[in-house]
Image 1 (tube, one colour):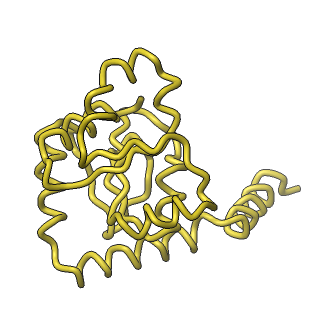
Image 2 (spheres, rainbow, N blue to C red):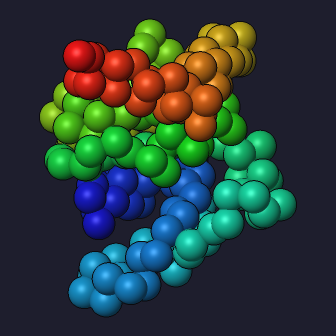
Image 3 (cartoon, helix red, strand yellow):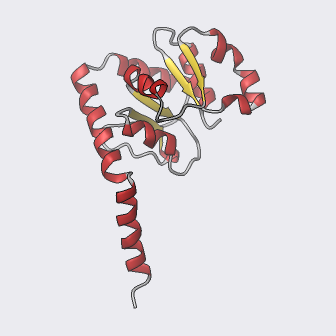
Length: 165
């Protein structure tokens, strides 16, 4: 599940913080079985399953959270994280996830339980003003670089470069 094990183990050890897990985790039967306790029995970890990003449930999650964690060792775009950035969440991600971090996101250098616990505890102590600044920058980056219009422009530039006579 691309780093979700590290995330779950990190939050299992930080009961003062909440985690919302969104995605089709139950379809990975071995993973779900191994982490059933964290997903079902810990009151501060909320297993939501697959969520429609246009739903009120998703909008409420965005209002309840400050960041999105992508601890993958290999990805290629981090579409779910980009979607969350459109909602103003601050990305916390590995270099391998290729999620853009700018100066608003947080890099997971060596994804481990202890590193992630340190990061999420630090975020929980960050001033509301700083979190608002990072959230605004995350949203702005997503709205500037990850829209249909931005894709169309980038693709047109690519075609102009490749197809020059």
